Length: 208
Length: 208
DNA sequence: TCAAAAATCTAACATTGTTAGCAATTAGAC
DNA sequence: GTCTAATTGCTAACAATGTTAGATTTTTGA
Image (cartoon, rainbow over all chains, first blue to last red):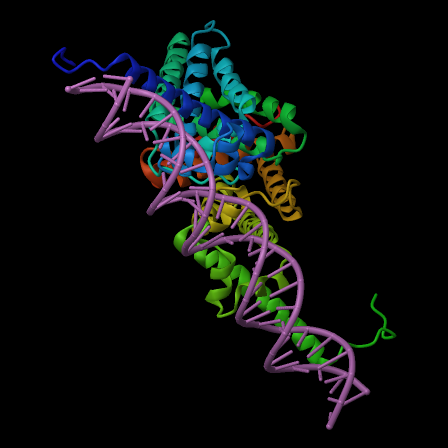
């Protein structure tokens, strides 16, 4: 624990720290807005800074590179997805499975630019090879929810982490193809197909 | 029908046309090799040309832009995938479903750089909004195979195009996450999970 | 042999991410 | 209040990118 022996930072120092943090957030938001309006390949350092009426190098006082900013947005995305999944998992017992899938879908299309940053789509390079902590947390929430749903049905998952990976892969595949316009019939049909296949897919994950 | 009235092109003209085509292919291959060795963000026009001991602008005598080259590689990828799926669909009746999924998986990991170009991964931007003809052909082959498999079992698909989209999305999700290193346990486990969920997923697509 | 066409290069352009170095502002100690 | 040190932000520049213009060489077909 941090001891009082450490010199307390002055009020102005705290204020500056807070302002720095706010600036960081504003840079992240600016990148998101540009990406959502014109796609990720319109997101340049000069445009991010310009949107806040700063010059380009300002970014390097808050991120070591453009890639680091993208990685941070990826984590923001996984954190928001985790929160949505958590809320969906709290819902009524019946229909909770569908609610989880709907939450995943709703997140992806409420913030496509975040979803793309998280999954290396639309020209966004993967900043980190390893799976970020926030992603693992989202997976954990998903796993606990699936186990709960199985339990309510008086059953259990044969391989809980495997069930999460399998269903997650399916949801990601549906969203990914739908977002890329690769599924005839558009988003509505894609969503229906996803929700239709969800229940049998889950059932197959139960121990027999 | 091409009439004899059209002036026959001279032998050297034919040769030049053939050489042009070969050069085009060599440029495509060079891009693939660089991408497979160092990833797509190492693929620059100067490097593609340099690998063939040409200077950069040579590319513009064969493609109108870098993007066009990527789109062409995307089509090459879908054509090769379609061929693999076709071969898998010709196999023995029992296990044909698994063979299709294995063919999809094998293609993706035999040529990850192609798979990435096809699906806008690893920093490759989507060149075309609309689904390319070659992709639709691969879907068609897949659909016919699934219908055949259902028929062998004395059943039929409730919604053939829907079944294709659904299962395709699942396969893509599995490959996509596995390729990005997002599935714990690596490729072997990812592949097993995919094949395990495949059969119940297909069964759910049959008319009841 | 010669003019037209094709192939290929060098040089340049604007834009990208990034860094160096300077100017202005602010902080905190005396 | 004043002075030094730190912070903040800018301009200018860098190399690398995709792309184009223009010149030059090579090839073609008569």
